[in-house]
Length: 312
Image 1 (spheres, rainbow, N blue to C red):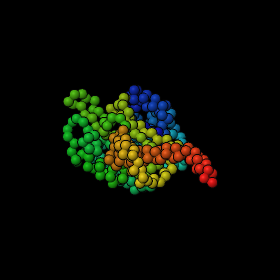
Image 2 (cartoon, one colour):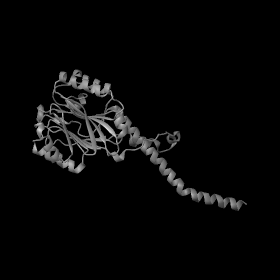
Image 3 (cartoon, helix red, strand yellow):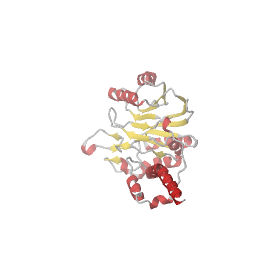
Image 4 (tube, helix red, strand yellow):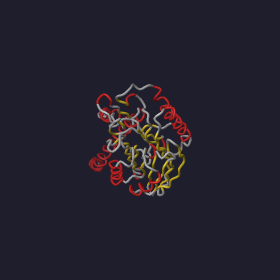
């Protein structure tokens, strides 16, 4: 599944919309989520045709647009002022997933309505769920550079909502800041206002999903590129840690080499990523030894037979 989620800040901006169309031609997105299109909803179908996707949806405030590929049957589950929730069923694989596209209010009091609606959506815990968009709030002080200091009151409601809903930040590659106020020198402010989060079920279904913050061109927000092909879904196999690995002379080197990550995320996601990297290298090491054994075994077998014959 490939997708783009972007606060485009007006589809009328030629540079932004042309960039969107070009990216779709390059990546062939399954769906596109846009925030702040700043255009009459009656023109939605016109933009759908120009992009080249078969289905288009808008929320009641016309602040969120969604474009979806023909391979999905789509049902609108929630249509509210600050979000649009779609249930997307792949017509070939029959995989069902919920996607919530968010454009949050700037005011913390008004965002409470959004958090309450997410609590209700989280009740359906068995279906893979992706939540992405412009939340107009940061997680902590590390996600802001410039401007006034961050206060706990600014982020407390957001943190409580994400923790209660059991959705986790997917992390990202690229710049940590997804928004810039467009000013220079002492007046500039950078924030991470945009993010993608999922429940555990979504991460298990798409274990290789990656989020990349693309450069801010045509908008003051970064587009968020999501990459994960349906064809790369793997059947989860049980992992058994073998104690003799710790006795191998290269074991510590393998752990040290893999105990890093090339993206930013919360501690849970980073720890999980590091464990997966170590597990992969441990498995590949066993495979290499088995390959050597399989090549040498016939030679050993012949030698053993030769020795037995000589002893007779």
